[in-house]
Length: 111
Length: 116
Image: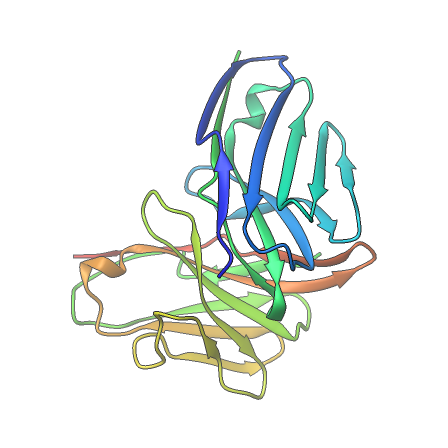
């Protein structure tokens, strides 16, 4: 059974800092991995999708890396802004398009 | 991408009653998923719903408690039956969309359920 761990559970940083969110998973037989953002009381917004054959994906200030063999992914956020404040979730996909979610990292970026 | 809507957006229900949540997608999709997010926790997959076949439930979830319909390629419903306060959660539907970058799951805004 896939288990996903995200570290840290919470993070508070001043605006402008570069930061790294970590995700580890126990079953490396994944098809891809997605990073999501969840704002309070809202649904999920897909940020990045990394295929199992890829090492990284970039979108704007976001860069996600994947080391499938070691069961790790990181989300790098450059020049953080208060609008980045949200909970970030990683979710590797296994057979049957099943996503397993971590508990998330609650990020607060202070002006 | 896909645009997903859910109804109702929120509801307060009495224990012992049932609530049916609707999920509508703006394009035809093969696979739809239902998730539950209990307060302060992450998402847990309830079941996968494919059009034309019975839903596949994850361990810990049963059809009698969470019956699902999938009448066509753009619509699905999840019913939370005989509700108890422990069913208070956010219920989200999602769809799998294949694009140039691979398969991406998109989520609806969720239905916030409070059972008294």
